[in-house]
Image (cartoon, rainbow over all chains, first blue to last red):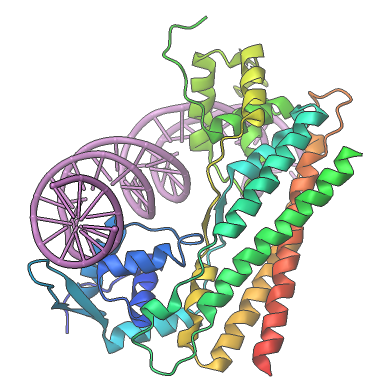
Length: 185
Length: 185
DNA sequence: GAGCACATGTAATTTGTTACATGATTCC
DNA sequence: GGAATCATGTAACAAATTACATGTGCTC
């Protein structure tokens, strides 16, 4: 089907394939869906999505058709069989790079010893407030909006992912509150 | 003291300043200490540490002196008063960029709906096993090894950071086990 | 008609990793 | 004597973000 050298699929590839499978059709829609669901553990940008779609099309993992609305151009992409197979193979594969985390907040926490006790407590309180903030702002993945492609399939993992994120934040909040109490004595 | 334009301090700057304060003296020692303590939430490399030390020295936040061992050259760095002040100011500052996370594992989880139930369960089990692995391999920050510079100061935050990491992993393990049980019914 | 969401891309810049280059010291 | 660790740096490369560039359609 293609004479291209074998394509190397990266997480962004699977993000795109996965969102297509859930029913997002345009690059813009994929990015929007990602912002509302996967952004907190796999951030991306349009400058990644568009080139990736083109790359996947060159390798016949997706097909593109014109889908203009009046004068505004738009592309509608679909998974090919090879594309769906690649997605499933990845989901089944055990290979897993460890999660990468960059938390300035934890870095501060780690060095907090340099502060007098009052400032340590202030730091903990600020951290806890911020965690509470993030908890209330977790996007509930707007699954119905993008699952038009799925007939009858019960979609629960996106919601579970959001649930997990909220639980983690709640756990962190409690952990910080306890430490605050202990340190404040 | 310097005619350089004002220095812009980034997290790697504070990592270096903080490790110096804990008693690491050479660039190599800073990297080693970071690998054993902060690497899981703020990874870095020697190719960042060395240039950063040079930059901090140019701006008089650290001082460098020769500390060769025989024929092997080595530099010993120390915080200046300005350096310690910068570290403390950062620790007190509320500014906080949200943590950045990239977890291929969670991305898989999010899309796991595409799999038949058995494969979903296998995915959950693999995730849980991997979390358990990471939990057992968490480095305990080797604080005594680098705290020669601190006289009498009780250093507990590095240990607390490791405790928190272990707690989070344990929480995740339980969460996954429960989901597995629920899904397995 | 103003402002925002929809829509697609490329270019420039930033950030960070891995590879390269070189050598000394220590431990088995 | 060989391997691992100590020690310092630079160069090449990779990945990702932000900025740039352009225009349409919808809603208040």
